[in-house]
Length: 314
Image (cartoon, rainbow, N blue to C red; front, side, top):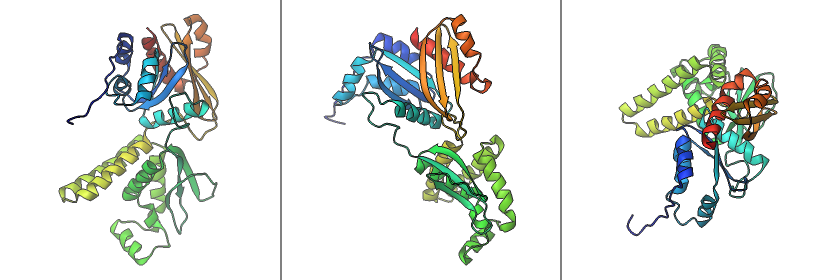
């Protein structure tokens, strides 16, 4: 815009090389100063694009400019989804808040999805705590109450369990008939919902395809408001079912190690939360006993991030 000015900081040669090593993938990044103190922890949908942006278009944010001038080292972890990156960022910030971070734990609120199969009032709800019940189960935790509510709305759109209960109003009974749902379909709907929430690939793909068909159908009928609403629900659905293990409900404790080209990375999972991330120079001989105890399910994650750490350290 006319009259608008931006401050642009030249990308130093070493930083340019480091940023070029980052993938176009979701993850968490960490800046350190010359004394190896952590300046800032952040997350990104695209690591290379986000980290590279710190050296351009800083505007009048003098505080951010001061931080960028102090960056001496870049570290990053590649995650399997934006949701996983959000959890990892939150877990790390809850351990210690670096100087340039403002909020411990990030902005999103942890929630769960409660799936109830009570004969009278079955359905999905988004809750902030878990209470055991003989006729309900919980999935999560998830970050982002708004996104999860959109996902729950999407699931109701294609698997309307709430219309399979015995306590429906006359209007709700009419809607149930239109959707081909009745109390006899309750258990089948519960099974399909459980499969989606357990991230079964086939069931997830089928549900998403149904949502896309409804969105496209609304657009073809020029009902653009409905199409836009379904699109936001699809985005919430994708967030919900994306791969994510930085925080899980199982109380797992495990040490995860990866080594590549002289760099050992160490992730610590405590009570199901990946909350520690360290890396250091290490010989392959010294690293081997640690790498050997890494569970097979974490081996790819550890190796991939050790290789990235080695590239960023070179």
